[in-house]
Image 1 (cartoon, rainbow, N blue to C red):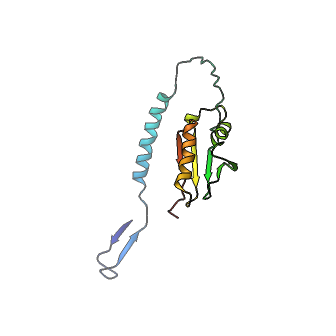
Image 2 (image 1 turned 90 degrees about the vertical axis):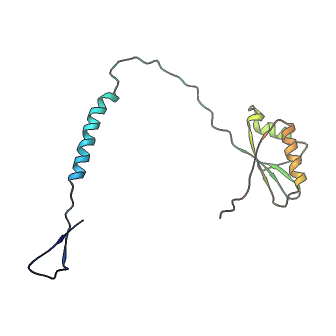
Length: 145
């Protein structure tokens, strides 16, 4: 925004009038330059050689598998999702949950009560590793609330 300092007749020597007209000349110059650039570049982006492309039939992709959660309660109770299980049956139940997928590539999410004994947690970890489940993620509560 410009200002005009008046000098001479009328008003005090500190009176300033504001010039509220917008100067659009730089804007128009930039827009014209961009227009020319796009007019030159657009024909280069199109392909002028005609080619008959073969049809491609991609096999349908499977949806990512539903994550598997193991919950350990403070009294030592173990759950796969919402279904209760025991340490002895944990490996077989996990293989049923995984189905035909490879256990080595599955990520298992473990949730524990904060008062769970460390021995109970390690028994679950050992049962998972004995059955080929090596990728484990631990779930915690977000402390940044």
